Length: 112
Image 1 (cartoon, one colour):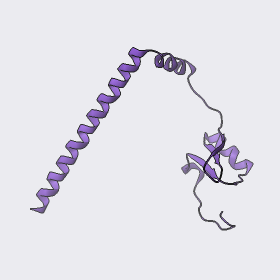
Image 2: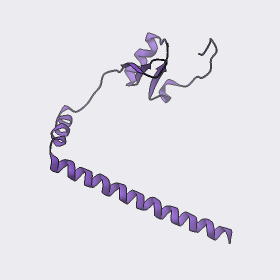
Image 3: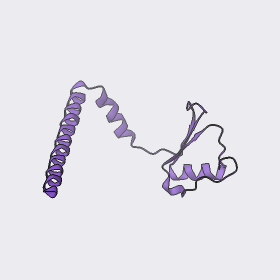
Image 4: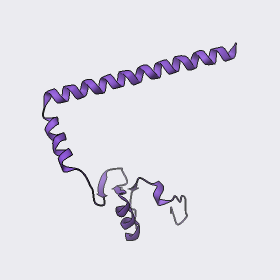
């Protein structure tokens, strides 16, 4: 609602999260529903500065998180991961360029 006029309505299950800018009030029922579904709510002030975030229970694998922190301190693991990321990006970029080349050839052939 903006100035007592409904401007938009969307099913809650379509939203991954809610960001409120300015002085926004939400019902406790809406907040509870978001928390149950794992949907976060973020409040920003009128200038877009972060004010608060509310999230429901967060689940995670503590053993995985610990391993990730240990790996982040190991230079060899970091370098191996970086090499892998770059190699993947290069492969993907090559595929995009090849696809673009095929598409442009196909478009040229259609014109003749």
